[in-house]
Length: 108
Image (cartoon, rainbow, N blue to C red; front, side, top):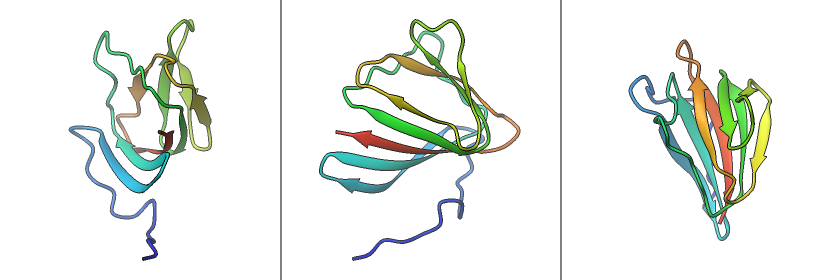
């Protein structure tokens, strides 16, 4: 079966919680659409994933803090980041005034 769609269509309401939707999964990789609107990682929480993750912001804005860096990295449309496995990171901020759309590719 061939899957098709539009990344920007039928956006869920993320005003309460960030929403992650798996768009495709293959042996060794997963592709997700993440919709954020004003969310951030809880205080003291750090992602420490066993896989490499590549993310790009397609609309909106976000700030990601990488452990050991002095300031969050600001991401806007077109900005991407590859986060190696076990590099601790957190979402410091997402734009509360509009949806931030992320495309995430995770290696398993």
